[in-house]
Length: 203
Image (cartoon, rainbow, N blue to C red; front, side, top):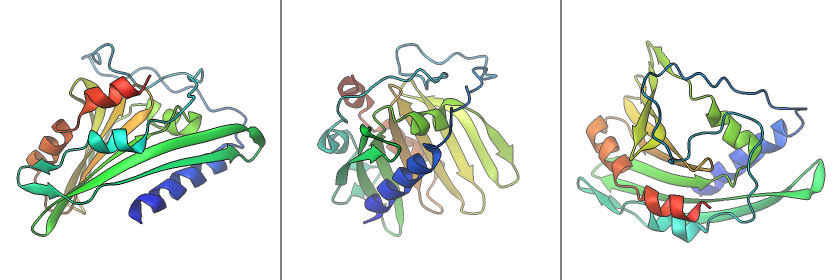
């Protein structure tokens, strides 16, 4: 059921922001001297977003997720596809799909979720800023995973690590360790995702 809650939460965000006249153009200056590798699907930095005829099938996303990493064993994966209409323009249909697996070892877990936003404008733009945060409760830093732009996050209150990887402007892969899961295990899970198969499906 967790994956369904995530679907409805994202859908609600899209509905709420759909009333905005126009999304602001994100700042294209990353402040990083190391350019993001080419041909990896960098987050878009303008409002001219692509169109998507069909979301990637959730089984494709599931098949790209790891089943075992450093002794963490995957449970039964979950997948869903959601289609809904713009409340202000019923002819405009939005859709996206998601696949998720939970890797478990003892009392610790690493959740891996791949969500195809299908170029939904406000979802994609939310990630296009590519900003960084560093503070007393943790950090959010730019990095790359398998050549794709990503954010590496640490939450001090929860003592947990997380990655968010952006593939081909449309697929967000989240790798989320539970409390006290070592950063090395979360990183291993992030590196175990089949990004190439996701990228091939994200035409």
